[in-house]
Length: 140
Length: 140
Image 1: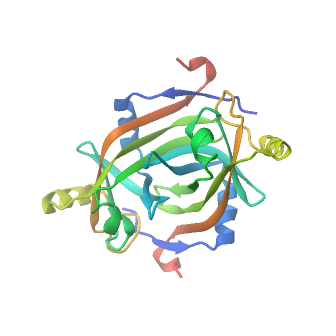
Image 2: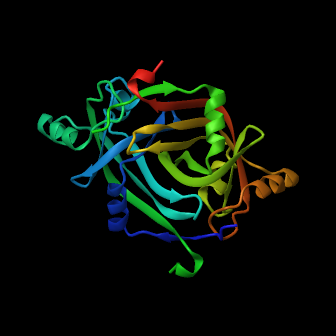
């Protein structure tokens, strides 16, 4: 049986570095007053989390146009060793409307799913939380 | 460059089977009107998603006692092949107050993190959504 772990907080800089090191995460938002979540691939560019969505989806049509507050979570957790990390940023999602900026982000971020993922959305982190699972004696 | 994928919807039964096949996911909830998310290990038992939390946390103190609607997401996605799946269930989170039931769930679910993870919370799935990333020619 694997030993239980301690939670160690990550610095904001380290949390953002880890968030940028993985190719996908989960955008968390409120839809008709209910909690909702969608996995999506992302990049971190200019300090923002950038994703691409289909213009027909609720993220494109409702969440980003309303400049809604969303959370974005990414993690790299090993269930066998029970080690790893998770980062959660909270901030405002907005459509990237500047054509030049949108094209630049599109070059950085190929969607995994086919079909008109032409809406670029950026999330500006306002709150950054990160933690790491560490062996008990390493916690400090 | 890996080809783009199609999204194929999973049946409810298959989605729940996959959710039960992985050891952790992310509980998604609303905290002071803001979207919030916490990774946590889980089991599926009696058709419910069961997690353990520290009694001092917001999930134990605010979300579950209020019988709030939450989402629970789990996935197994391969960023290199761009294949895999994600399942999202939405339902009411409640503290498991029956002592016998709580003890039974605790035996099924060892927390990864040390320190008084003595609150057992169950989520009863009301809405089940699952999708799979498949090669374009396999979509049907």
